[in-house]
Length: 145
Image (cartoon, rainbow, N blue to C red; front, top):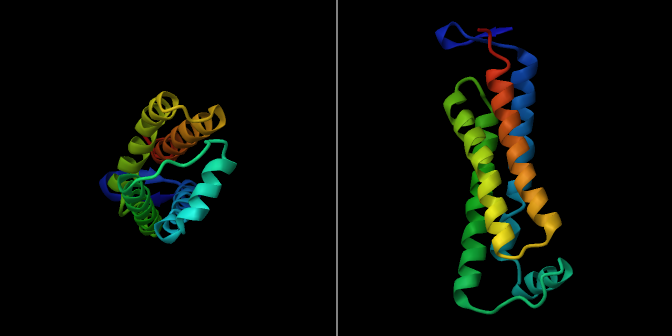
């Protein structure tokens, strides 16, 4: 057990697991950097391969894809930073847990109303929800009362 500020205690195993979960999510989000520089032809091929039909054209779409991908990638970097010391960055880890938990129903509604395939909608929503819940459970479930 490791003592933290305020007299709370969190087991080393839970801290370690929380850090590894942050690194795992961060690694997945780092993959988004690829779309920042990915040729449009590759995006079009991926769009069709995913069963989404022909990819629409337009500057706004490409702007959104590339800027959102950059933001996801940078969030991945921030998760790696949080993983370096989950006790020190506890409030930010909790914020990320809550944000991922809230993203689950938001992403479900977005994915569903925009006509994303069912597998995408389920994976996107449940992935965020379970990750957020796991971060919070490891934090609050691992603390002495």
